[in-house]
Structure formats: structure tokens, C-alpha cells
Amino acid sequence: MILKMPSSISEKRMFPSKLLSLLIAFSVLLLISSSLSLLRFDDDSSVPKSVLQFILVNNSSIHTKPNLKTDDPRTIPLKRPVFEIEKRVVEEQEQENYKSCDQENKDLLRVYMYDLPAEFHFGLLGWKGDGNRMWPDLNDRDKLPSYPGGLNLQHSIEYWLTLDLLASNNPNVTRGCSAIRVKNSSEADVVFVPFFSSLSYNRHSKPEGKQKISLDRILQEKLVDFLKKRREWKRKGGRDHLIVAHHPNSMLFARRKLGSAMFVLADFGRYPTEVANVEKDVIAPYRHMVRTIAADDSPPFEERPMLVYFQGAIYRKDGGEIRQELFYLLKDEKDAHFAFGSVQSNGVRQAGKGMSSSKFCLNIAGDTPSSNRLFDAIATHCVPVVISDEIELPFEDVLDYSEFSVFVKSSDAVKKGYLVNLLRSIERDKWTKMWERLKEISGHFEYNYPSKRGDAVHMIWQTVYRKRSPTMLSVHRKNRYSRLQVL
Image (cartoon, rainbow, N blue to C red):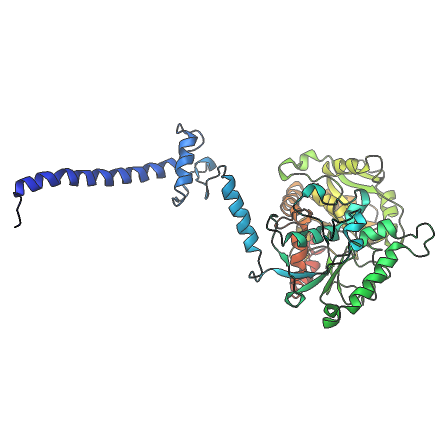
């Protein structure tokens, strides 16, 4: 039997239930409205930041549009709240970054690296290895072999590239993701040869003791013998191999025998075109010597009293004779610094200070078309003046150097009064535009370990990847002198 409750009693009991539902709905709406309002508070708000942080962190799905009616940047909500993230979240982000650098990413350069004996690479830095270990342990940064300083460091490119490839297989290292080491050579775009050729030349190019030939030459001969026997080399005749020979005298005995490979060089000054040329090879920046200036600390036009700066070797052979001519033309100019200098006696620090107080810095051909001064100038945001008709520039297929540099033909530079009059004619606004561009692109010339997205290591790998499309390189090369028409 079913008992029916009187309707009046039923309605009375249901009333509190409806009221409670309405109160809950109203409270939820009020909470959402309050959260959205909090997002619009600026730094001067009386709302405690801890409260705001709690709401934002725990309601990450809340998004608002900027207030376009005000020019005060403090009132524009950030796209993502900037607060300290828990360590666990950081670790997850690092793992995600590592996962994005896997072989499924079609934009990655896949690199097969030979496991050469340590005598070809880190053994040249005194690394003895640990048992049967082929490579240093990247998990212990303190035990990584360091590259020697001084002038050695400017040609250290193979060191940074090798470390980056080793790190690409290590989930404990977060790095810029443009290349990854593959274990199977058949899956590779290029085959990397980890020979520290510049260091070998700098330290072992002369016979020692009773030796009749140098250790550098012995290593080159061993390398040629090793490569010529490898099926990886035979497969394409070495055309997919990547060899770093940044010092102009490195690989001197082996370069012709391995000339089908892609070289990473400073310039082509000491190479015949059939061995090295801009179509197949990569130009990499020197590792600059002076201290990098942060963009926010870079002195502007008014705080750079010196018009033009050069410090270095003045008397050079080959194409470097122009340095002597410019020295006699500029030595008496009151706002020009043109003097001999070296890395000795605190020379690097003095050069960095001089460049950061100058508007323009000369990069003049020496024994070879390139020099480290271009990259010292970029690091100090001193507008480079390039006087080297045969120079090749790093990453010129994606960077238009005429936006942040001045190019002067050698035949014009040695005309009396031409150079200083040209530089003095560049007004503050034009100079500032180049200076601002320098601050934007200077990170592309920094070598880091671990590598960073957009740094020199990242850019070199990308250049190797882009070698199949040389179109923009020719366009930017044509722009070098064209901008002088509008100065």
C-alpha cells in the first residue's frame, strides 16, 4: 500500500532544498566573477598576492582578454601568470622538452657520430676516460673536460658540437633541439666526425722530441685511413660527412683527401674552391673573446664617445696589408682608436671596454678574410664595419648583415677621408636602428653547453639542415653594399 503525503507538507519540505540549490549556484557565479576581477588587479592592488597566486595557479583554465583601453602595461593581464613553479612542474617541462627532441620530429637534423678513440677528441684535452667509457659522463658537469682559453678558444667549434650531440641522447640534459644523434647511420642526414682538428693543430702541429712528424699529422693520417674504410664513407663518397676544421691551418694534410665532405670553416681563404666552397660547406662564427654585454646594459649612442675602434695586429701578410694603410690614415683622427693589441697583458679586457665605448668597430681582413673581431663587435653591440672583400659570413642565408653592419670595399676604405666621413654621416637614428638589431641577433653567436634555442650551436645545425636550399644566401649577399646607397 502506498501512502500519499499531503501536498502542503511536501511543498514545505522541498522549499529549503530549492533555496539551497539557488544559493549554491549563486555562490559559484560569485566565485567565478571574483576570480576574473582579480586578474585585472595591478601590482598596486590591495589584494594580497598570495591570494591571487592561489586562485591563478589552481584555476589555470581561466583566460581573459587584455584591456585595450589603457596604455599602462601593468593593467594588461599576462598570457600566463608568472609565479614560481613547483620543482615537480619544472621537471615535467624538462622531460617534455626532451620528448619533443625525438626522432618523430621531422624538422630535426639526424646525425650519426663515429665513436672515435679519445685521442681524436677529449683525449686532446687530457681526458683519460673511465674504464671502457668512450665519452665523458655528461651527468657530472664538474668532470667535463674544459677547453683551453686564450686564442685556442676562438676555434673551439668542434667541442661544442660534439657535446651537443652527446647531450641529445641524455634525458638529464635540457638543450636546444635542432639535431639529435642516431645510432644507425642509415637513418642519418649527416655523419659527424668528432675530430678536434683546431686543437690538434694549435697544440701538436710541430714534432716533439725525436718525432719526425707531428702528432697532428699522425692523427690526420689515421683519420683518413679510418674514414676511407668505412661503409658510411663509401656509400656516398663522403658527401654526407661533416668535418669541423675551423682553424685556417687545421686538417692541412687531410683536407684534399677528404674534400668531398662538408666542412665547418671560418672562411675559405686557404682552401681551393674544389675542396671548399660556399655551396657545400658551412661557415661558423668564431667563439668571441670579449665579455658579452647584456642588452639592457648596452651603452647607447650618447655613451659611446669613440667613433671607430680597432685593436689588434697591424702588420699582416697577404690581404692584411690594408691594415697598415688604414693605420696611417686613422692614427691622427681624434675620435678614432687604431692601435696594436694582443691577448697578453689584459688585452682582451681592454678591447672589450674599448669596443663597448665605440660606435663602430673595424673588422679588417688579416692573413685570412675573417677574424674574431667581427664577433667581438657583435658581443659588445658595436656596429661592425666590415672591410674584407672575400669574407664569408655565418648564417647569411637567414641573417641580413646589412641591417646591423656597414660594408666598405677595400678600394674605397684606403681613400683619404673616405672611411671617417662615411661613418660620421651615419646619424644617430640610423646607428640606433643597427644597434637595436645587434642586440636582437647577438645570441645567435653565443656558444653554450647545454645549447640554447637560437644560439650558435643551434644555428650551425640548422645551417647544415638548410644546405639544400641556398636561395636566400645569394639574396643577402647582394645586400651587403646596397644599403650604402641610402646612408
